View 1 (cartoon, rainbow, N blue to C red):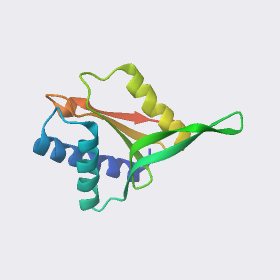
View 2: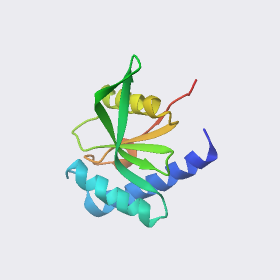
View 3: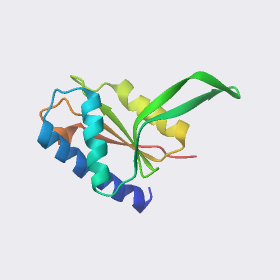
Length: 128
C-alpha cells in the first residue's frame, strides 16, 4: 500500500467522523454522500461522486455499469451504506469495485450505527 493512499484514508476517516458527529445515524445514504464529499473537498481532496464504472465481459462492455459512491483523489473508493447491519456481500461488492477500477484501497462505511469507528472497514485489493 502506498503512503499516499494511507494519508488519504486518514483524511477520509476524519471526514467520516465529522459528518457522523454532526448528522448522527439513520439518514439516507445520499445525505451522507453529499456531506462527506463536501467535507473532503473542504480538506483539499479531489472528490468525484457516483463514478460510473463500465463492466466488461468477454471483451464486451455491458449496458449495465456500476456506480462507485465516492472516488477520492483518484486513488481511494469510498462505499457508503446506511443499513441495519453490514453483510459479507457489502465487503465483496467493494472488493469487486476495486478490481474493476484497478484501485488498491477502499473504505466501506455504515453510517447507521451507534459506533462509527467500528463501522469503517478498509478493503485492500492486492493487485496481481
